Amino acid sequence: MEIIIAIIAIIGIWVIAKHWMRISSNEKRINNEMQQLGLSMEELAGLDREEAEAKIARAQQKYRESLLAKGIDIYNFMPVIGQDIAWIDIVRHVFRILEFDRGGTVVGPNNEVKAESMLLPYGYLIAESPILNQPVKIPICHAFDFLQAAMVFDSPEIIAEIGTQYELLVTYAPKKAYSDGRGKGQWHVMHYVITPHGTLDRYYDYEYDQHMKYPKPEKLFGQFIYEGETSIEFNNAPDL
Image 1 (cartoon, rainbow, N blue to C red):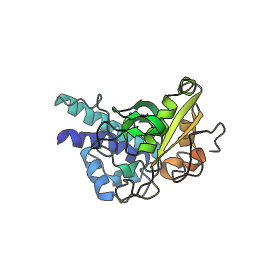
Image 2 (cartoon, rainbow, N blue to C red; image 1 turned 180 degrees about the horizontal axis):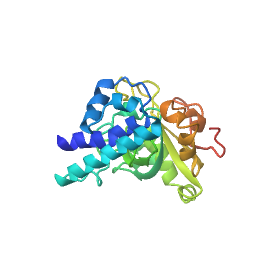
Image 3 (cartoon, rainbow, N blue to C red; image 1 turned 90 degrees about the vertical axis):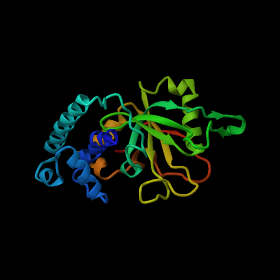
Image 4 (cartoon, helix red, strand yellow; image 1 turned 180 degrees about the vertical axis):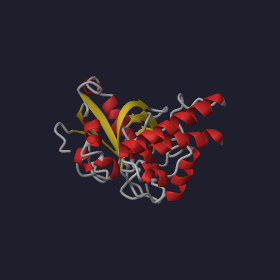
């Protein structure tokens, strides 16, 4: 149980640090997580964004050291969205994909996606974002979302330029969702775009982190398509 609390306090709290001015529908949960670090929303209310982030970062470091003294190594742990970080905390936020974990899933003839197990996600995206302070694993729960990622990673010409000239971005934006952020209905939930390297950082730096408080992923991805044919596009000149 303590490791779960540690994950929330070290990882989940960073979302709050980045969004600390945002009104949250999970105020009780946030206050509980703050208390794990010995902080409260009230004491952050009088600080500007940089002061608040610095204060939380110091509390995080102190908490990490106390965990290490107990033999809990949080540094080598990669949190999983939906388990360690709530889906609701990443809705419409943008991530840079670092790796594609296929999880044993294969793509057969006619682009048929065959999962290794019906009880597990099709695979995972290993991704990073300025809204979190370390990489995370994003489960791929829809066959179409897996197929889209596979098409990029199976293209030597494209993948050779990812990480150098370009970056592959993803956003989790369900057409409909439950109150906890999980996708609702038959529609796929992830959207991809290929942009010039550095776009994600510029997107979140825009006008003093406006997109952290008020995500506008359509600026990068265009209008989301949930039905009919769609493919991963290049956006060479995103209008931030």
